[in-house]
Length: 106
Picture 1 (cartoon, rainbow, N blue to C red):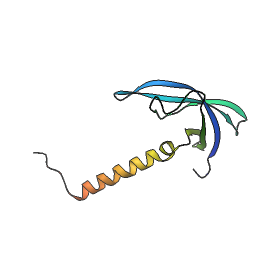
Picture 2 (picture 1 turned 30 degrees about the horizontal axis):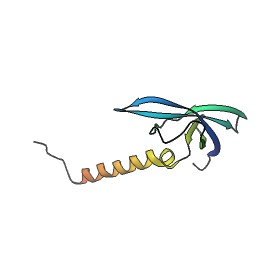
Picture 3 (picture 1 turned 45 degrees about the vertical axis):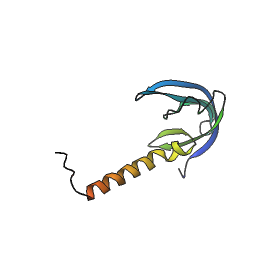
Picture 4 (picture 1 turned 180 degrees about the horizontal axis):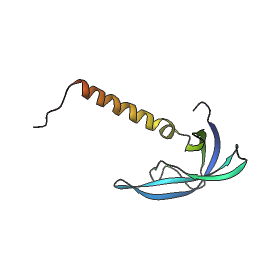
């Protein structure tokens, strides 16, 4: 995140898609790419509740280059830190479970 850029974007669409047993709304955002000096769009990889964002709403977009590919996300806590925190918490739970020894289910 140290070498990422933050810019403003506008939600132009909410893409409705099935996620597990529910429906997620994936914001499609138009933003100005300062690196390439042009207007671009991207669809968020995270789905949200229907009422989280509105079409026409302005949001912050965070982007950075990773392995010669641009990674984009809405600049909010869950997008930036959610996956890392989730992996850490569940990794710690499995670590603790491993310390307690095998669980016998029979």
